[in-house]
Amino acid sequence: MSSNSVVSLVVYGVVAAFGVIINVLVLISFVRGRLASSQYSSIYILALQTLIVDVIFITIHLFYWIPKAINPDFLSVEGYDSFILHLVDSIGTYAWFHNALSHVFISSNRFVVLVFFERSFFTRRRVIIMAIVHHFLALTITLLTQFAIPCCRLSFDFSIFSYFNVPNGDLPNYSDIFFTVPVNTLSTVTSVVCYTTIFITVRRERTATKSMQISDAKRKSEYSYALQFASLAGVFSFCWISFRVFPFIIPLSDPNLVWVFGLTTVFTMVNCFMNALVYLVNNKDVQRNLSSLYGYEPTLIQPTTMHTVSSVGMR
Image 1 (cartoon, rainbow, N blue to C red):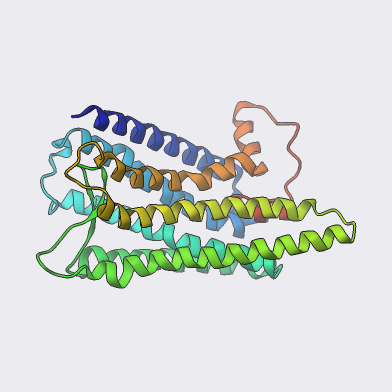
Image 2 (tube, rainbow, N blue to C red):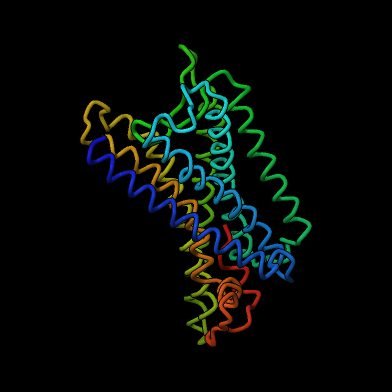
């Protein structure tokens, strides 16, 4: 194994381990504080199911794909027809499509809340239905692309530590054509349209608010959170676009550049813990629940308002 491969795997391992820890901490806070049963449970229901899928995806990286890249004999999996590898690939694919669709849901949510001020639309019942539809769509697309359609299922190339489509003879990549590319494109385009509209709307309102000499602190906060969620969508977009572009600009024959393919994997893992990190840094409920584990109540934390909960840590 080359020195570049060793360094790359160390980076992958550190990023994956950090991501698992961050996601688990936030999940502990959710469970300990029963946030999904709180008065703002509709907000936390969407977040909780996304956090669970994210931690599953990044755990696959940490405990299967990284060890397999280090030791090809790990779990005695041979070839891409292995049932174990196919199952792991399918779980990873489900997590990817769930993540892609989550950006459509969250950007649309932020659009309705910040542009039309319609928080009342996202009732607990409607959010539960949205979560069920979210999982159903991700599962359906996964079954079609990984099992039903003859070409080409998404898997992992351990030689370059990145993702690739397993070819099936000369068949066209129907999975890409009909599902993967359209879903990824929908996610990015929806995010760009919604967040661009949000930024324009909030900036206009801030200007109007200042002209009326009324405090715009609340809108500044919402604008800041919208920027954070837009950054999540930006990382996601880099992941799938780099997956498409790198094979055309990075020669596989150059061992000194092969590590660049792994950037897609690194940013995919970062994408899996950024949402949890936003919660950990900004959400007062999460901070308070974790602090109480050590018998410490932070004095700076104030009771959570509708504004704070509805703006922080959703994706």
